[in-house]
Amino acid sequence: MDPLTRARSLLFGSASILIAIGIVMIYSASAIYALDTMKDPNYFLVRHLVYLGIGSLIAWLASRINYQALRRHSKNILIAVIVLMVLVLIPHIGSSAGGARRWFKFMGFSVQPSEFLKIALIFYMADFLERKKESLSDLKHTVLPALFVLGVSAGLVLKQPDLGTAVTIAMVMLILFFAAGFPLKYLAGIVAVAIPGLLYAMLAKPYRRKRILAFFHPWDDPRGVGFQIIQSFLALGSGGLFGRGLGGSQQKLFFLPESHTDFIFSIIGEELGFVGAGSVILLFLVFIFSGMVIVFRSKNYFSQILALGLVSLIGFEAVINIGVSIGALPTKGLSLPFISYGGSALLANMVALGLLINISKQKPALS
Image (cartoon, rainbow, N blue to C red):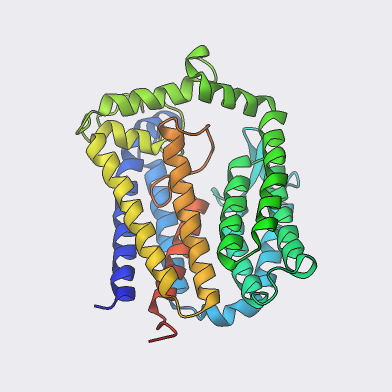
């Protein structure tokens, strides 16, 4: 078995197991809450399975499409998603919840365009960087246009507001710029400008300041802003080595908010223990490792940059979600790839999976 075939098998296998874990844990974490609020214990599970069915079809299509030919339309795809990002901000078109306006509602289901913006931006930037690979040090014609596209995309996400997704987009793009070969002086300049902007965004809103304070001192306000992370600690801490057993979580009983979405890793740790939580981390490491094999053995520059962006996106989101759950990072509303309940995020993850499988099918240039 050649390395690309082996990497594809590991990638698909690890993603499939993560998806299976997600199905089980979403039901476990949400059944009681769904029964209380929706009068149906299967409410979130059924919706998740619907999204998963659609996502599986999309992943299959993405694994078979001629993505090289689709490059010609990368700019139009990105523009279309940006238009959706603008429309979602308009009252009576986009839907709001919790002070954020991020969703379109359709037949009882919601779609979050920012999730697809991540994929569209990676696809566009892979094409852009491939076309500009001979002039990566050209500030006017390469660096500034790339930063303009990134700025527009991240700015629309911040307008929703969604700082976590904006930071994720920026970090993935920075990885692509570095891998493509942007001069270090430009990368240093980007970081130097971005850090003050990030600090301002984190501190400008009162609720974000409270999250930062809760990150450093959650016990100062255990019933307020520190409540969620403290409950996450209690869930993980009570799991021990092998956990309370599947379905045995206490924190999901209306103690830990968002237990089937942002904090599902905490429920995994409580019910399946260190072994279960460690296995999830190991599966993500296998996914990232096999994804990087595909990156290094891709047949051309465009495929390498595209694969790197997709692997970085999945890996970065997993690191942030798990980091938040264990208290290593301030609270951010990012789902755990392939596992958390969340329709648009799952669909975007499945697109990424399908594209990575597609890329792995191509013969290396030197073979």
